[in-house]
Length: 301
Length: 191
Image (tube, rainbow over all chains, first blue to last red):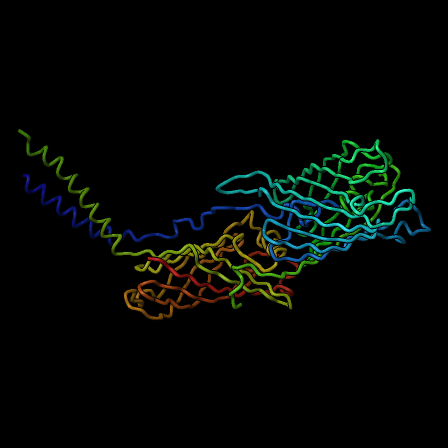
């Protein structure tokens, strides 16, 4: 009896052996491939600027971005000035991505003959997948030098008096492919102001969003609320359309601000939406890849 | 005293379990899975002057030597372009990578039996299977090479796909972007 059971067991071993070796091939198709370790959310905004102000986006590492910003005169000037199209101010600038996180840029505006330079650094990036971070955070710092000659002759300003600075934290989130929002707490410091009653530091909060209309067209809006303000100026509001083509992004917009540097468009917007003091403008960006990333260096295409 | 029947009751399942163990052990040695997570995949879809090409260095691939079953998987976001803007457009406008994050291939090396994995050499192979890009599956057949060196196989292959076959839409396809994309695979497997 015991022997018989032993022999059945042995038979079982043999049977198992044969059965499993023949009819249990490893099925790779049942496996799922590619597990995501890090899934960074990209394309929160379509350009490095929402309209005038910095967006959460950086130029890629080794990418040079040549930008021309153009603002016409006020539309409500009427037909004699061809609704503002006779006048124009512009800023010409070069931005460069040093690393994936760090970007710098320089520019020159015809408005008040300003030079400006900025750094933008990614602190946190929005992520999905294994680790979820719901927002991106960057810092942008801008230095602005107003080289326009002062008309007053009573006081000769120092070079340093003509500088102003902007510090911004950019907090942005892409809700889905169609909608992104950015909140931008901003501090602007003037090295010199007109008189002692005016503070040197101004605080404001920017709000911007992107709404996708089609694959290549996005509506953008940017607004800054000023907590303390210079008299006679308005909060800037800009509404624009981003149009993407191959290597360019065109941004067309209507705004009440003329200046294109942080100091001038946030704090010194002279136009009012209520009075129809609006300006048509556009930004053109063309990118050039100057430095290839390591992954792409030794490849024969 | 333990009855004979009790022994039988215990012994048979016990031995059967042993048999199963044995069987599965044999199973592993009979079939071998070669795998990599760092395969390379290039594609080139240049249609005009501007180069439209990218590389993915994180190709996940496995194959079984006994059956010739082979899979490749890539994350669309893992493709690196020289131009950041192009990469963004590739993801957002063409591949729609948030909706279709992966592309994969599931198929068979048809002449796997002709390969001796213990002997170094360069063996031509024929691969056939389903390629899924942008959520659309298409049958693909191509040939390539399997090189065995120090017992480690490397698969290289080249084929092209018609972009429109996969439901990828865009104004520039057929102009700046070639209507057919050339794809090159290079996977070095560990064993």
